[in-house]
Image (cartoon, rainbow over all chains, first blue to last red; front, side, top):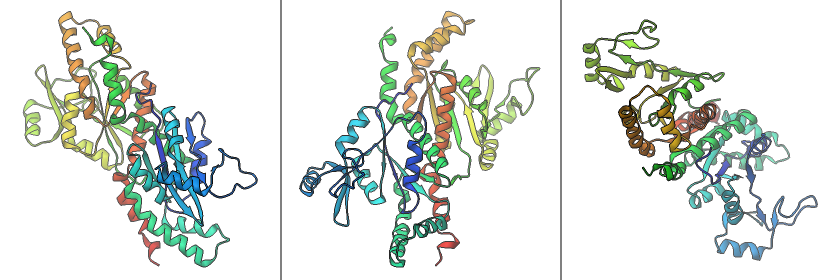
Length: 210
Length: 210
């Protein structure tokens, strides 16, 4: 029996190269979960394999910029000329349905969400050692020395932002990290500030009139 | 990999009749736990089956009162002429060993611990409905109408204190409640305030000097 019936917004972030998307996938592969993934909106063109509303919501620049003005994004960014953002209305809808909505986003986006969603749970994924992070960035290959150094510098500046999050989860092994996140979701549902109203209601229900 | 190596002090409390001790037993029956139970100190005489240091630490009134004066208890109370208390040194010792120390205590004792151990995790166990609480108190039998009414009145005043706790856990079924408490313990270990120092240390370790 859950005293808190509304879903939780779970923001999973962390420095570049920590393995956010692998952990998110492991989370969604777990049995019996009630997690929902928020589909992002973008102005870039769909690739042939991509489907509207599943991979992204594809919109024009004009539409996107209007939505920015109207405060319709929980977070947004512009990468190499294309906008990407998390539409607020879809997230709120899923939360109202009692789903746990997972955002897997960059540190900058997470801090934007923080300012708007006071009730969300912020998880900072970290490597078991700094070396692991750098090796991971290197192993992606394909990048020039300059690009690699930029990524390392970005990770260097991001890892210090852990203090802005509610939880720090070590990604020593993706399934362990996913397990820890599941425990956090369960625990957060029981936190007094989320349950006290429903609990008092329950205790002051019909059978308390004597 | 745990960033927080110190154990947690877990205080399980709740209104009379909610089933605190059944939940605590279910918790200790779980596989692979690293929970430790704090042995209380008392001035009452041992029953024939009771062993020193296992069921209680048995001491004289003089010794107990000295320990009160010296602030050696995390909480203490006097029930029908006998003292009962939780010795602080044993608890600290187990926490230093990295164990999760569970105290299953009355609401009044829990609030005493709250004042001394800012870092402890306070869990308020609640019935799924008020009726369940009253039925449970009644089913204990053996008590006079007057005693039963006193217990109900006590539970009535205690259930409102939930807001002083970190978590509210519904005892709809003992194993569910124990599972929720385990998730809380795991999540609390990942909380930023418990992990940030070790994490920064890790990230600024030897391999960060370039």
